[in-house]
View 1 (spheres, rainbow, N blue to C red):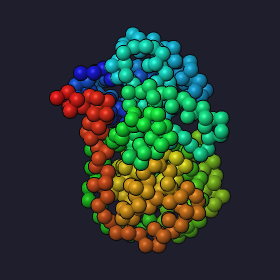
View 2: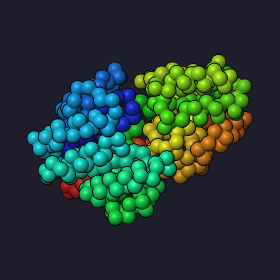
View 3: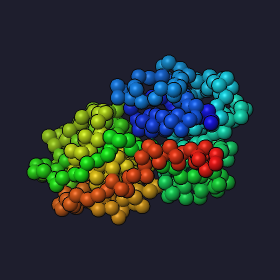
View 4: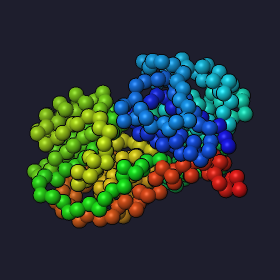
Length: 370
């Protein structure tokens, strides 16, 4: 059995923390020695404190956050290399874009026997990158992709895209299922919609990437007299978004409920999930919504958005603009579709399937060991 170390920047309320804990637990249950290594220790939300099962090690390289993630990684880089040399894991798994270069360059420079795997959780090449930043990202990722034992992508569409963008590392890319669904999303059969306002749900960190400003503007432009919008999540843009809702004249129909640990209950209460981001990898909330038999209208913000949603009843993927999103919401609200079974499209993303696909991609699956 292998010693697998999962590397992340911080233990926070984001989806990456949940996924890496689900994977760590699954790897341990499969008989592997497992450690989670954070650059910095921060307090977990109460519902996440007990996520690592007994036997899963957890370490932090520093006890406080720096002013920026980049600075935090620079400050802890030498400690990370020393940790690798002391503990000598067999496999290092970088759990997301925000830790990839750190995890990879540490393994390369530590010169241990470890093989490392990169997981891409957001687009690598972005339209928003300037010329210099774009060339730098391509150069750094080209290096760490070529040196990696494997690069784990979250969809076939993303694999195809990355092979075109980084042809020299084309044989490194392999699709895995992420660990999104727990037993909490074993959705009961949804009944017909109750009388009352239609409830639209958005969820995520209130940051620029998620474009909740676009969601608010699209909701206001759709002019839904019989609908409400609930936003679950917290972050630095909360005050600005509340002010925008007031300016748009929809504050009385918008609830901002902050971080909630019980997303299954929120999704069970909603009629439509809306994702308004500029970019994503494969968003956990979309899979969780489908597992809850909750239709999804999303911007075309992740590689497989149209492939996943285009043909599903009540679902749509539209271009990343307020106008396109408001048009989609207006059409949906004018004729809400009947309830249908969407859960089967999310079942590949159960924790058990995700653990098996990750282990297979890292050469530790059952087929690799007879």
